[in-house]
Length: 239
Image 1 (tube, rainbow, N blue to C red):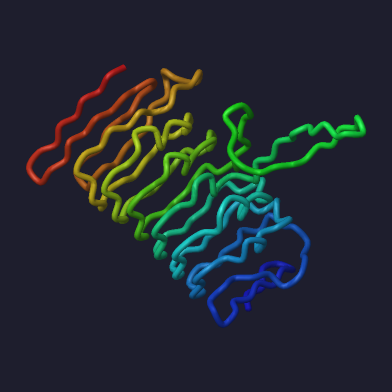
Image 2 (cartoon, rainbow, N blue to C red):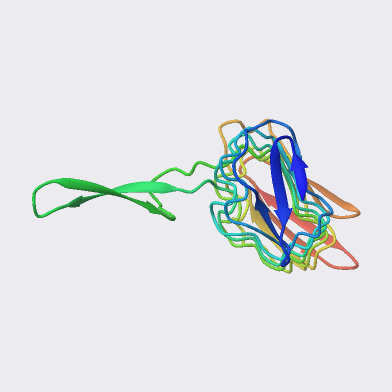
């Protein structure tokens, strides 16, 4: 049992983190590191919208629930999932639930609106306010192209210490405010990234750490290609 302000979290016999009842929302950082957590209940953070920091480091998480796990965390700015056992990141897991309305004509002439969840190409996404996200030291081998979709406030992203062998070129395309991206200690043999375009550029640049000895600045409207090997590194940029 973990007491957080006036909230009580518990871990069942299967290592699943749950919350006992409702509690008053608070801005106190939520630190749940080193609790031997194996999984998260889909509604464990429901109605908790005030806290800005969530730490789940040094647990045994192998997966995250799909879209919606962080849907109510509207003030969350820093999320740390370091030193877990995550093998995948579900698409748009860092979103709130995306809803759109569809108007159905009924035989009586009345209209009914049904709420659906899912992806759409025509409506904007509303992501979290995350500025820092750390997935350092997990077991990620692949990132879906929509892993970080809509995360326009993200400034620092740490993917170091995983088992990534390749990345979709546009996986970071929505990160218009990204300042630092860490990819060291993966299995990347080549890297081609298309970074975001933003009206805040061209003054802003992103800082990319590919390995212990390679640091690259990524600037506005930039396409970056890297070929990595034990003996040399070749970079090519195109504005």
